[in-house]
Length: 307
Image (cartoon, rainbow, N blue to C red; front, side, top):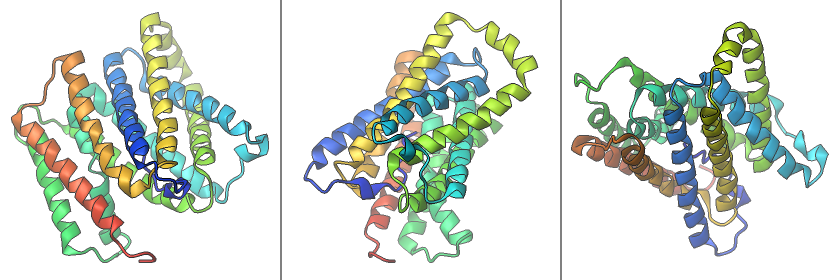
């Protein structure tokens, strides 16, 4: 999913809002294409290998990008601990998303992952003890109703696997909080490079620890599947780079509502690739989740400076 993570300070201040919004919409298409590819791959490639390629590719691309400004800038950070926490949260988020895509329709996974702003509100109230106005609580309730419409507990399509996209949304909500703090001390490219570096290092350890079982499985992967893996990594990393470009042209508060365009792209790709079009209730639920998320973001954007 699109990782809008509090880096609004990189907006250059020029009146390029239209271009920023256009890039944002293309970004959501790239992320939806990446998720669709993961679902196409299915169980052909182990999840650890998918994650390793995805983050290794991002690390290399962003490393080259950042090196143009000087090699020392690659590892310069104001908070090593937060960078590590951010990387682990995003890695967990990706793992949960990839697992969800193996078991659930693409629109269901995408829509439930979009609950992150609402979960952020819950965490602020329950963990941080922040004051949450009634208007935001109304959006949380609205989002919960949307989730019920999407998964419909008791129905034939409801299984325990919905825990994966919900866990994905929860970890992403925590990821956004950490990213917001990091945006005050580090630039966007450095942060995303270090996230990929830490994630790749963790995955290398996991691959080494499980090599006895993993290597035989990888030997059976077809060339076509590896091409899909490469395409997935390209789309995911391309989405990250386009996100940075969008944030240079328009404020985060303007761009965030357009991240919900990913729901439309996910539905379209699901119909084209898997013949799984959302039914009436799922469509309504997705719209309700999008409305509640956009409402939460807009309310947050109206918060007074310094609040």
